[in-house]
Image (cartoon, rainbow over the protein chains, first blue to last red):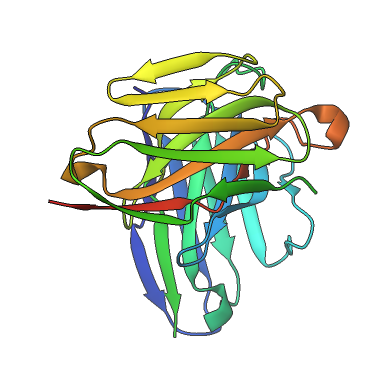
Length: 119
Length: 116
């Protein structure tokens, strides 16, 4: 099946620093990727939709200047948490539907997640 | 916005027992998905449902898309220790309800614990 990777799997940083998380589709192309955030024992909340070649679409309440998204190619999207603070500590998960996905019958494949801890 | 109510929140059962969990919504969904998430990992798709009334199996797992398009259930038969984890339902609402294309709405999860 389709494989989505994330790097790093775990990162610890000091408050005020910026952290970049990569999401790659390994064996398929994706013009769209999704970034989710998950708090402990909570469900996944969609943060933004990453679009190759255009600006990302952010969900209501998500600061676009705080969470910078760049969809550099058909296999790579990056999420940069700028000036991270302890409240940004969370599990960040990306997902990607295969190219040609029409939003109907195809499904999204999730990455393994990145655990961010801000001290 | 749309919400999914998933129940139960947690289950603690004996190995070999059957398990049932469900999700309901106040609005119509055109896709229902069931995922399993192990600790520190991303969700893995178990079953996808696309048509009202559809009943689909994947090994010991069976899921159904409710005919009202507002609910779905997942059954696990003869549970084993490796079934432990958190199960999430997810749905894609109709665009007329304001759902972004591709926007999956997730339930809050059902934590399954199995006694060996």
